[in-house]
Length: 253
Image 1 (cartoon, rainbow, N blue to C red):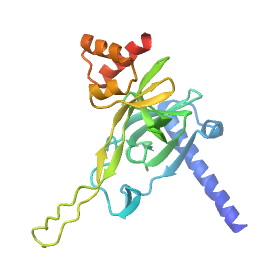
Image 2: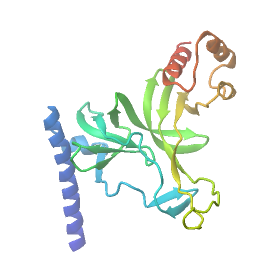
Image 3: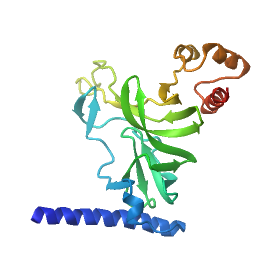
């Protein structure tokens, strides 16, 4: 009975925190107050206090290792102005940043307020730096994953998305001794960028490769038409604007 009461008290406290956070922000931005229906119809949003800035355990090749990874898991370390956009049309101004390592957004009411993690589902969008981000269930190389994607262009038959992500990589050990101690220096795991563009066509997901030859071999588009398009346009498959033009063209034919 005591455990049930404690759990009930915890849920009420968490719920009150969520309502208070978003309502105070809504008042600052001139937006209407948040209701329980906004938060939990369809399981829209859950906030959780962020306890640590760094990672004490890092998943590496299926194993857990102790220590902290070098580099940053964030798309940008600094918080920037953004919006939480509900599927009912309501919007709430926040400061936000994207942890691409964990695929979660972190938000603040202001720079001096506590940081919280926001778990989004398909009924929530996040706007950050004038880009819109949504949660997608994607199948890449027969692997089903949930990913936060930037919506580059969504058209009737073909869509283009940007998948910002980072992975943990362990540098190759050199065996070089530290100059002052004589002991071998153990290399630290590092956050490494693994960003990629994705194309959704006929309900199939395709990763855009880093070369035109590899793009041809994927047969996403008719190879003859793709070659013809490349000759007539300055196609750069590493640039978002160039890929948007390509996708728009093939969607129209």
